[in-house]
Every structure is written in structure tokens, then in C-alpha cells.
Image (cartoon, rainbow, N blue to C red):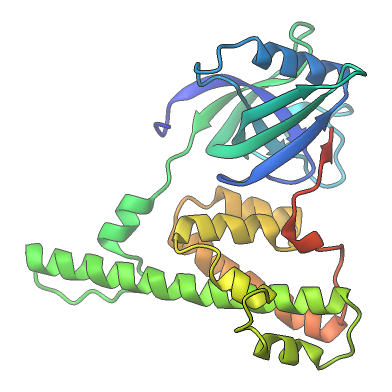
Length: 280
């Protein structure tokens, strides 16, 4: 999507943000969202318009009781419809995949169509810029103009991004191991033994170390799978640069690991990072 371009799209508020590349199954039963799925299904499959915007609802707010714009976070992600299965009761089972991030500019409420729509502004990723210039937190300027210097700076930027990605991947593997261990009810100390067995092909740590070599994909996987607050996830979604997103995740994962080891509990079932059916 072109950054800065505006468009009106259907809106589907949920309790947590959606991230690019993440699969989101939905069980749709509310009448207005049945209408949304019927409208989308009527569009040509190759139109590129079978999608809607997912935005997270602010904690403690109810969309129906206040102005919708006040109850919703201002950065969301489109959900592209991949499969729709009408149900005998008139509802739908839907499989979507997160695609493009956007900023919410205005929420449109009408009787027809009955579902929310919004004017949005598409948000660009900053991948090309950050790879070319690096990041002030990671690179110190070394002086000297010229193409050779630019090439060297870009190479160092890429190397530092790879280092940061590896750090987050390792932290996430430790986090998954710790959460899985505690949900299994093992006694304290067993997490280290489980981590030590990380070379086994089916161990959580080994599987997650191999999950992706793509820094951007890794950043969105961690953002969607870790047991973070809606506020933390929203901050990660709003971040346009992969490098800064990964840096924030590194801090959040260290915090969560410390809490896990201090409190010795996890807030909700991990369910092996499977995305549950979401009821609207």
C-alpha cells in the first residue's frame, strides 16, 4: 500500500490487534457482520477488495456505548479474506490473514450498511530507509562521504539487524519454553532442563529458533504470539520500523521472563501459540 493514501474500508473491532502475516480465524454470528461477510463474498475473488480493517478496542470501553472513534485504537491492520464457509444458522466461519497497517482517521456509522466503516490512511513500513541508513541506537557515524562509506554503513546496518533478530529469536524461544513449562505444572528449575534439551527437533525452543529468518516476519510473530497486554501489542503494531519493533520486543520479552520467574505463573493458556476462533 502507498503511505498517505486514504480509503474507506469496512471495520471489524476486536479485543486485540491483528498483525501483518498472522492468520485470524473468525466465527461470525452477529447480524451486521453477517451482512459484512455477505457483501465481501459478493465481490469478485480477484478484486483485491475482500478485506476489512481490524482495530483493537480500548480496555474498559464498549463501542456501542460511546463514540466508536473514542473506543478504538487509531492504528489497525487489514484482514484479507482467504476462505468463507456459510453456516446453517446463517453465520460464517472465516479465515483471514493480516495484511496492511493503517491509521484510523474517521469512523463512519450508518444504517446501511449496518457495520462500521472507516476512512483510513495507509502506513508504510520503513524497511528500505532503515537498511540504508541504519539506526542511531545501533550505528555510530564514522565520517567520510562517498559511496563506499554508504555501502559500509548499509552492511553494518544489516548486520546489526541480524544480530537484533537473533537476540529476539533466542529470547522468544526461552519465553516459549518458560511458559510451556509453567503451564505443564512442572516444579521450579525444570525450565532450565527443558531449555537444555533445545537441540531436540520437537522441543519448543528448537522449533521457534527455526521459525523464520525474516526480521519483519519474526517481529510480527512475536508481537502476536507473546502473552502481552493490548497496550503493548498496540505499541508494536504502531511501530513502522522493524528494527525499533524488535528492540521493543527485546525489552518486553526480558520483562516478561523476569515476571514469569518471579511470579511463577502465566496469565492465560498459551495453547502452543494457536490463534483461537474469535467470537464477534
